[in-house]
Amino acid sequence: MPIPTAPALFVGLSARILLNAVYKPGAPRGVPDSILLGVWQGVGVQCVAGNINLAIVLGFAVIAKLIYDYSVTPDLNKVLTTVIGVLLGVIGTELLSSYIEQYFGTGGVKQIGHHRRTRTNSIPYGYPSVHEYTRPKPSHARTVQFGSSVAGGSVESEFIPATHVSSDITSIASSFELIGHNPASIPLEREIAALRARASLADSERRRYREEREWALEQGNVARAEQLKSEYKRYKALMESCHKEADLKLLTLEAARNGAPRRDDRYDFSRDFEPPDRDIPSSSKTRGSSHQDRTKSSHHRRVSSSRHSRLDPYR
Image (cartoon, rainbow, N blue to C red; front, side, top):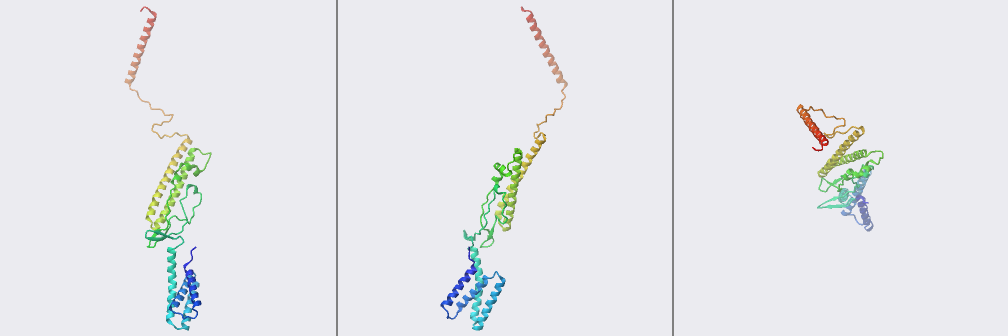
């Protein structure tokens, strides 16, 4: 647990003044002692700066002490050195506190190249998997966090590795985990439900990437915004493809339930289809009839010749 800067300085200066009073009880107060006393008073004012009423009361007490010292020993140099010490105590404590909080915060110091930046403690947040979608997301956790740099501007305080959950959303093995087990449903219905569930998860990821991209643009991190934009487009395409495939399977299921045959093929005809009658040319009919007559006459001649051969064995 870090110790506040102003109270620590106040305790240290109090110990120093107490040691001077113990070991030098009758020594005259010089310029260094006046400056030390003024710094001690200024640090005390800075300690109670959060409480306005108490700070005002303590400020009037410091002014009253200066007036009393000047009335007892009218030495203008001691009064001026005490006032300078008070100002040094107030301003120096504020600067020292900001410096220590910036470079020696609770998360320590992180060295990157020639620049130093602080590492802030943030809540560890990773992209949830499919199994964790039933749990509510923490509203105060923010994936993209930025802090002020030493040179000015904004830098990313901590790098968070990007993980992808496309394998969990698009995998077929997670279908029953997404929709549950329903014994009464047919396989086609389960496929449709799984596609709808994957589309819903892809839509959730798409909206999350859109919000994170807006946060990144607000902080001026263009590279991170472009990366989140590509992820947003990928999950948007995944959502649309899942919805389209589910719609096609739903149409197939409705057609199967209604008993209507699907006519996806141009050569797929129904059972009651009768081809249209075609007019046969007369020449074709004449050629066909003459051919049949010649075939019949040749058949009769072969039959009659075989009969004569059986009746006349010496032939």
